[in-house]
Image (cartoon, rainbow, N blue to C red; front, side, top):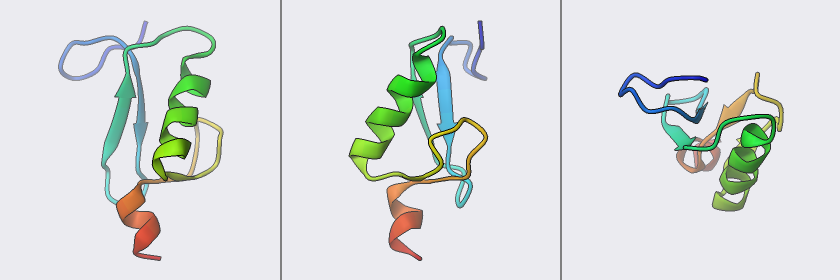
Length: 63
């Protein structure tokens, strides 16, 4: 199970532009899909694959 720096388990999405992160406590096979769906609805852009690239709403607005 992945562990974040703060010690909490979950899945993390990191912006390739500025390093901003988004996380979910979900783990397992569908955790990434759930996190990406939430990020996409919130305005993040990029690849729907874990390797990215991914861009937060701030970086998308700066393009």
